[in-house]
Length: 335
Image (tube, rainbow, N blue to C red; front, side, top):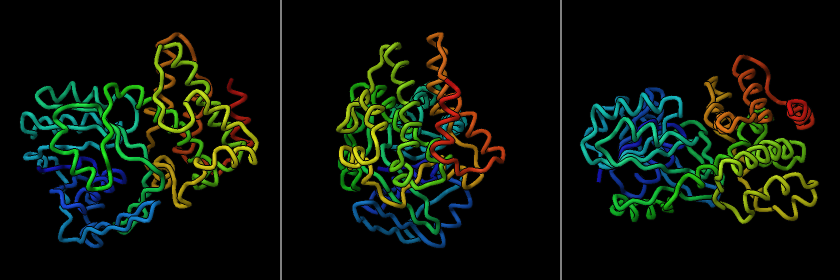
């Protein structure tokens, strides 16, 4: 089984690296910068549970053009959401008929975009629930819990054991959309975390930041109810109760939601990483999805729209490091 990861950044290198460390035939496709980095350092994969795996340089297969996917049986697409259509067109030109393609990307609609452009392949929507920090020098760290979620399909049969052996079990779902929205509810913290310029654990330990996330989630949950969508339960706490939990005073939150704070101190969000590297973020495919849902219902989503505005300002040069109270005032005034 030949597995290709197209768009190997943080998530792609981590997932592909775990598979390679378990003995799978994996080729990573990504930018020359990472190709050079891994050619020098290999892959070093760690997680919050203490896993410490290495794939030496001679066992890292890294290419920089989509031609490397020509013989792939399974392709994991991990490009940024804005690049999905381009990635699909690149794959359409080289993939053999019947290849299995999985979107492991943020957002809601990437699987649909791939499916439209790859009609002769099996295209499935997946979801990565955990956070990966690119520490540089070929080191990638999983800072939060989770395996991999994916739409159920018989074509996954040959790969289930491979992913399980890599420590990334596939949880299959008959309906993946509620799972995607449940993940997006959690990802609404990405802009809050990026604007705070703090590690995830430190940010979530402060009630003001949690109230910002609660406001974005409550707005989204109201829209999902109006749209007839019930997000899946990914945590002990049902999605509908998350805003209430997040608004609790710090001492109560620590007592009742200790698992939410049991985050690796290294953990950061991908949006923080993008801003740190001077890259455009995926804000349009996270909070932007909420705004689009609101528009489809003839409504507005002022809190999520404000978070988009604030992230765009940082992308344009505004300093990060907003305090929780300052950010909360910005969001409250938008409503």
